[in-house]
Image (cartoon, rainbow, N blue to C red; front, side, top):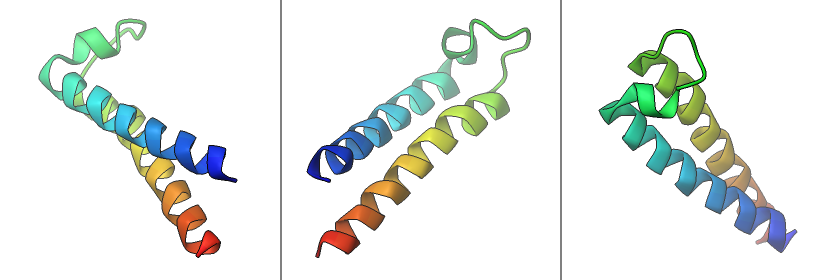
Length: 64
């Protein structure tokens, strides 16, 4: 359980870093897509960060 909690926190932090970089230059973060815009960056990396932090918070509350 501790490993999942740590991984979700790490994934959330990485998601926020990539989201920040993607908002600055979206074509760097979405190079494999046909169109690269900030909305797609928010959808992809924002969703990853949000889900990761929700999992982390849930596991933290369950453990306590």
